[in-house]
Image 1 (cartoon, helix red, strand yellow):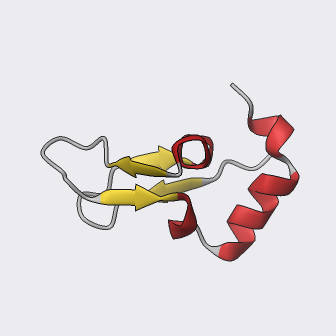
Image 2 (cartoon, helix red, strand yellow; image 1 turned 120 degrees about the vertical axis):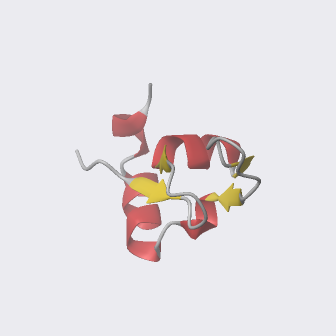
Image 3 (cartoon, rainbow, N blue to C red; image 1 turned 90 degrees about the vertical axis):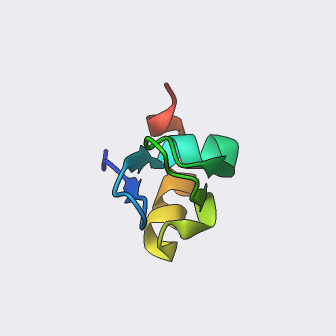
Length: 59
């Protein structure tokens, strides 16, 4: 199992890929940050790996 995350480009807050996949579009959870994060923000390799191994990332 790989840990796949995405860092907000504005504030650096780290978000797990499973949260991005579940919500698809979300406001950054960082304090006072209004950046919108999307599942598509993950690079293609990580997105494809996550989708192929989705069952491993279920909480």
